[in-house]
Length: 234
Image 1: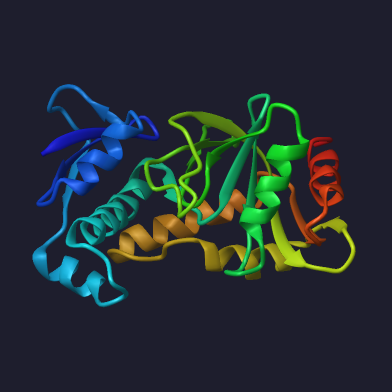
Image 2: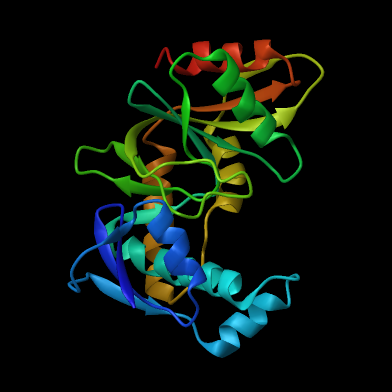
């Protein structure tokens, strides 16, 4: 058992395997004390079911289950997961979402190469928190994706961009219908009905909180420069 802090909420993790504790500890998410806002655990049956998805260790599968349960609970606190990569530049967060295989990681690499001060807050599974003033704060988590890009920090969300493949680089602001049809595939709509309803409410607020863009791009440096110059003007 150990306690982590995610999006400024304390969560007690009742683990069976050491993998998830090492994962959270290595990145500085474990905190002292036993007080927690809520607690989570994964059953042997859940871990076994997760193992059916690939040749993964029980500890790794427990970690996946643990984070899933955390994300099912956090909407009660105005916090939710959005499958995306987050780049932070001078305190502003830029979110990128894409279908698998489109080249999101490649585009992130181009930002790191071409945009001074750019760093990855989270490469895969960040947390978004709705603030009272209507803004959104994005937080890093220990679940960072296969590249292990990220750090324990936070930044204000400035814009969200959907990446598509293209032979030339073009970016435009997305319509509300385009945002809804794309963003719904990037959230985790699981758990009790109350949790799912809360997630949908938070998603609706997210859709109206920041500008959205659709970027059609190749793997040139110009793609990163174009997307940054466009989104940073907001």
